[in-house]
Length: 616
Image 1 (cartoon, one colour):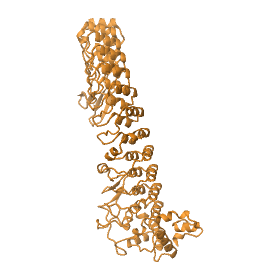
Image 2 (tube, rainbow, N blue to C red; image 1 turned 45 degrees about the vertical axis):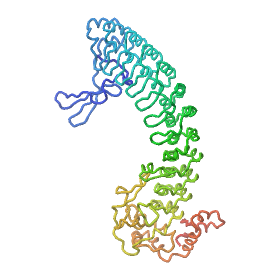
Image 3 (cartoon, rainbow, N blue to C red; image 1 turned 45 degrees about the horizontal axis):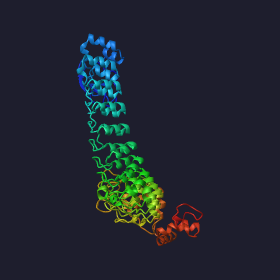
């Protein structure tokens, strides 16, 4: 027989778990097939060809038994006749284990149920392969009169299906108050658990059906029952933002501060999901905002991470700053990491320390050992967040790897400018990979305007021309061993990174002439050296840099520009810039100086009526 048209909701139809059920070969054994049931209750056959490929086809449907057709149509007379002609059909199940009585309960055919039970009353609690009784199927399909008749004739209201879901649980899932009351009237157990530990009250709370919750509690349902994960009905209501149910459960004594298996409270979950009314209700009923989950995060942390700025505003006065510090991570870190700018602004205005550092354990999770919220903002390329943090006093020099390096690698002129304006060190080094020149400039070699910004920000240009070999021949370059690169968010080192040139002495700091000789940068050597010469006085070029300038005819002017001694006008400008300093140079435009002089002192490489001053 065919279980005609059983809806594929939850547990009502699937008679076999997903995956292979049976295996068989065709006539010549050339291939094998596997019968299985999809999550929607559809039977299919997967055929495996000799070449290993698989194709899936619907399994031919089992022909409907005449008695099933009669039940489906509510044809009681035909059902009676068929029972006389074939009495064995009462106990012959289809491949899902469904008997005619199951079909009648599913289709809500009360008269057919009466006929079938009269013929064989012992079948009243017979189960399908999914352990569904006729009562369970009647409840699952909202057939109140069928359920009532079955209960009046002795059906057990506490027999659960394969997932340990009882008819009462299913009635709560269906939001059917009448069925809930009916089942309780016939003694259904109110605190039975499904395979996940959920009770009928959990399900009613999830559905926000206060009426059913009240009926269940009055029938003895325990408001503090926990499921397999330590979750109470109140937790479910808070997690789903079911305010009415939440209010009812609190009024019935449910513990607002109970914690789930992972340490999360109901308040924590409501904050995660942005249920502001639920948060307000729990806070007004003494929910503890300082109870951390096992992760160490407080409700304030999780609300900040998910961008719920209104909830953050509610939690700030309720949250202990000492508890925040003991978590080893600030809400600022999480807001910056997730680009939650509105939350970031609320936290800054509330006085959270913009220079708070990640704990050692939390910092170790990141390959670049980041510690500040500023680093997160720069790593994400979030200019607005970076500006907010810097204006609030964020120190750009606290991280192991200077955020300026990230900004330079991203090629973000605005961020680099912001960082320099707020004291970022353009000469910062990376302790694990020493260089003789400012490493930030290495990531601007293909972006000369950005390199100029670094040089204008007091980047040590003279260090680029320091070379331990000088005019002597340089040893061959090695591109194995140490190497440097950035990925999209973090610094990376290792053999998989893009290599720059290194000398045979791998322990010596990387020199500029070696870095610029790498295949990735060598074609940019001329323009880069030309720009650097604008920021130094009389410096000799090492033999390798000279070789670079001689390798292209168009770089001949740069080689002439490097010839010693340098022009007096250039040397004067260089000396004035040294005396004024980087901060003084930034204020040049505020002084009553001629535009030509400001352009001259600013190392402006564009031409004006004075000609190209930088080339003189």
